[in-house]
Image (cartoon, rainbow over all chains, first blue to last red; front, side, top):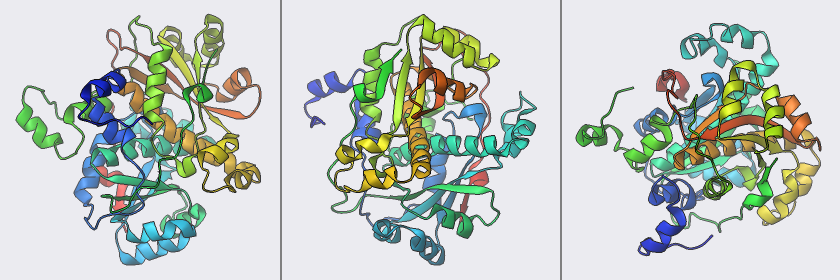
Length: 213
Length: 213
């Protein structure tokens, strides 16, 4: 990635000014934000998470499905149970992050459709009749919502470290004994600490991912 | 949602200033952005899509997996084939949107891991040995990337209309004859037209989705 200095605004605007979103907001959400490997001691409050949720809840899902569920792992006992389920490389971060959240899909999200998608009264029964389709919709839409939530954490000036290196079936058993949720991601959240960044990993080029037909 | 007028900046800042992201950027990406039901005639160029991708590609996925593939449905013939696969309610929008894109997961994303995740040389073989885990990782990470891409479309001042009301297996057969891709979402993209908005649908409250343990 080209290194851009904010004091060289002419070149900066020329390169990133083609989007309506302010270039500094682009940096905050995408270009300068990184997955932190260390965190400061500053706590992340419930109020901060609520502010994040109240912003990102407006982003779109299919049929206004809202399967995302957020479990804030606050007690030392719960944190220890979760750390045991993380793959080894993810344990130190999960032990030390100011906040760890389990992001899961509620397979029974369809129960809320009568209030959340009222102009299609048959939506709940449609999903009730097909559990495989429901689980698939729950996972897809919860993952979209996790993408939005990640942007919201960054919008709050915090680093978001989404991880899938974890025994997800174990998380379901430990944290969702009702059997109706599927953990998808464990996320560390906090202000970045010292030496928080690894080198930036590469990304695929546009012509490697996009085609026209 | 509280109606906020931009000329009443004191109340506005008080309500939305708790995030580091500028309140106007919050509006652009989340609060004022909506799923458009009509579009203007203004085209969406390949350059715009490339600018969007070059921003959102930096957002995080697990192990830097990058399964998202974008098919821009440009030719009238391809558009007609896709419209035939949409559920009836989504056909008019899909016929008239300036740009329609198929967003899919490449199940063989692991072939790129040697260049994209070079510090873990065993990553490709790990995924090569377990096709079910690979398909699951492809779908999860592509869905995260679709969430980021949606934000990028909005960052470009365009409306993004993600749809899953489509015969996705049919899309796979028609547009991905290699059998190695899974279509997840069809997205209409363009400047919003007249009467583009339905009433805003409700969202679940924070305490309906979040718990602490």
